[in-house]
Image (cartoon, rainbow, N blue to C red; front, side, top):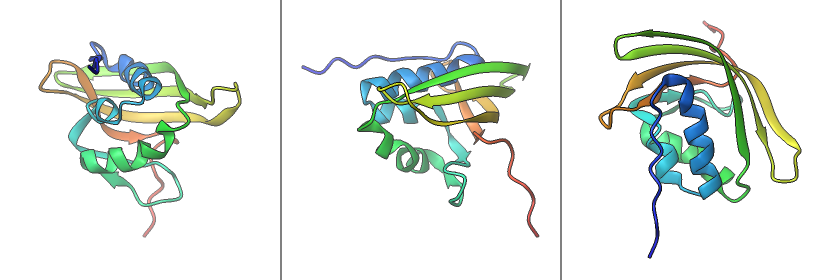
Length: 132
């Protein structure tokens, strides 16, 4: 019998910790549950943005075999109603301790149906630059 853990971000600043916990558990659906259904994710930065829950699954599926830890230090959190804006310093650390990626993110979060928070716009390296 498989035991499924449910992590819920009670505050917007808790979303990355929940994503990291699901990543450690190898739970792709859990990771996807931390994103709003209409989300857009700008990762990896050299690829077009990924949209919706399918985009989140695509963006994280390769990381499941590695099971790295996401360390996130939220440095700014602004909440108004069911929307929040976050800035954080983050790193993705492999099990051997090596840093796989790091940066300073900007995210917009929304309240989810389960009462927790999830990413609506996820920009791990900050908002993309406008290109005409």
